[in-house]
Length: 444
Image 1: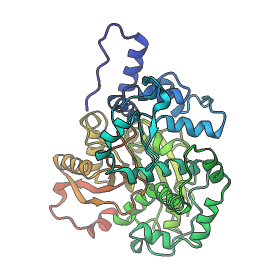
Image 2 (image 1 turned 180 degrees about the horizontal axis):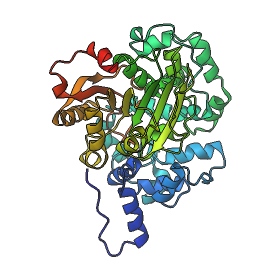
Image 3 (image 1 turned 180 degrees about the vertical axis):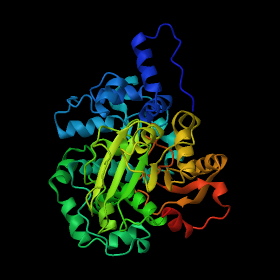
Image 4 (image 1 turned 45 degrees about the vertical axis):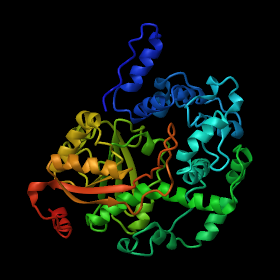
């Protein structure tokens, strides 16, 4: 997707032109998201910035990157916090009008079934129903999860987990994983009875769902929290990387503030529980949007634990600067969460050097996608690059939390890590794919 041009309207203020150009340049994925929002709902990005008590996208980036840690979001109460979040979803799903563009902003009404999307009039709601009825049930789930997700930030989700009692090969689905959790119902009860769960529904400004619905939401958000370490573990197991024979290094390429903002040292500890007795696991987040983190290790980390580090920059630069100079370990596995390299702009400016590097150095790689269409385009690109694809399809440990398109809610919700692909080396390494050969290749 090409950059949007700055408006040539001479009457537009210089300030707005500058802000638009800032949002459009560079590798920032959220800048493209802001532009997409405004293309669907004109003015929605301004509403979001206003609710964050910010004046520009540049100020938003500064807060995300940690340069302005003292950012004042102007939130005084829990009720105000939830209301501001809800306001960013408040526009007519049919005509796309914001409340501020109505004669009476209070005329905006919410769908009583899903408690998620809004209409400016009964006429718009009737016109939109043939489309909305296809997604109303899923959007109700998304609305519940959007609120309950706050408990991830308060630390109530996920509940404590234990070392795996089954081999990784025997854990094939989330249901298998949940059956390993001792006293699961008691753990869910504790989340349901937590202080912040009470605060949530006292201030959410919406009817409280049934307890059974909230309970299922907690489980979905638990899968959303663990889907990334589970993806890495899946890659380690599938490529037969042996974490018991020696330390393992995993590079997460294309990482952004989504993976690194407010990250805790324990967020990937499920990997240590997946491989108890490991010789040390390091997960290095690499990307131009990475929020400042601990630097990569120059020596092996502690046994039986997971060390999370980061590098702000493009992957091929990281490789040339640190890996080739032995200031960071060469990876046993490279993972990319929703890299989006199927978009021509991202491929030309950032992903092509990375994909060629992974191919030419014969590094095991696992990438995830939101949709089957994204997977299809990604496979086409890898085929054009003569990369040897070893497997692809629906991912068994995708997040079960539905993600709605904020500026266009009547689109099918998607799930994080819904699809995956595996590749290693170029196609001329051999025309036949045999996963048994991966173990021998990995020992070379």
